[in-house]
Amino acid sequence: MTFQHTQIDIQLLQQRAYNLRWAAVPKDVIPLTAADPDFKCPPMVQAAIENYTKGGYFSYAPAEGLPQFKEAVHQFLKSKRNYLVDPAHILPVDSAAFGIYLVCKTMLNPNDEAIIFDPVDFLFQYAIENIGAKPIRFPIPPSTQTVDFSLLEQLITPKTKLICLCNPLNPTGKVFKRSELEQLGKIALKHNIIILSDEIWSDIVFKPHVFTSIGSLSDSISNQVVTVSGFSKSYGLAGLRIGFIATSNKALFESIFAHSLHQSTIHGANSLGQIAAAAALNEAQDWLAEFVDHLQQMRDLITARINTIPGLKTLPPEGCYVSFIDITQTGMSAEQFHLKMLEQAKVAVVPGLSKWFGRGAEGYIRISFATSAELLTESINRIERNL
Image 1 (tube, rainbow, N blue to C red):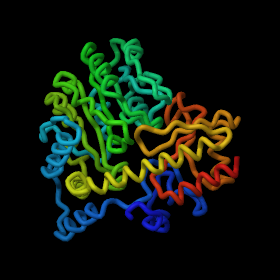
Image 2: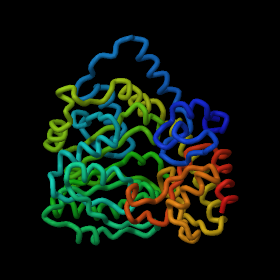
Image 3: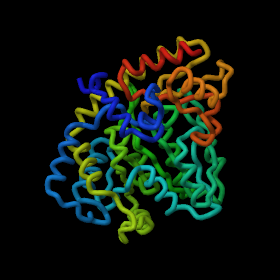
């Protein structure tokens, strides 16, 4: 019963859920925007936070992270991802987003190049450009076709220092096959380029698809990989600002840690976030499995409904709880569609603007379906009426 409509506290969401969501839109608008669930975090995570706060001390944590957090991530990667990383080479960071920035800061200098997908979430481009480097786009349009990464190899130049992998891919929902990742790993080895693997969506994968962590493929490929992930998508912990960086490459980890500013206390991951994340990994796996089952039902619901509405079409995502919807037949741009739905249908969606996802998102909108069947159905009804 955890993921029923009655379990969603809309009034509390309207007070606390920002970043384009309930607290940032008028109260008559349903926000299907930022990929943040409408459901509460797992009760065992709440209990872990409450138990920790009873002690009354909120002292400095170790610069390299709490031991129980590092061990929880180590065991998770080992048992769930077949990916062996020494706990000493796991670093908690204040969100996966900062983890992406920190790896880019470590690996890139001004005028360097980093290859990113198109479309993909804006955080890669944001981090790369803020360092003064240049993002190079590799198109991966929404489809079920196997990606030929030999075409990506053609983009590599002497300036290429990083390949940014987002798996599963936000916003299209693609889950990369093992064979695709092996091809990409071999290219990274051939050119001695580090792969930054953003795996924040790796828990949200729909049957029959299977997630493979690129760092698990072989020792040689693992040595070329830095994995970044977090706990906002799977467990609803966005406001706790907690993620991690992991790599089996000792020298690379030491360089990342040196750039992190954790040693000086200028930067660091908060203790409560680490306690919550450790509890999520150690105690909330049954809860997570139930959540993914619910999301698969919502994926099927939105895919079936959207494809009955004239002018709209979408493919069922293999992973991620977002639907990437082709609106080109409506005759509207993504921004026009977004504004029409916001003002008339009272539904907030994310337009496929270049600033969010790259040019490959033009003609699309993105809808998050991490909500109840009732809210999702009502939103689609409103969209359909206004078209």
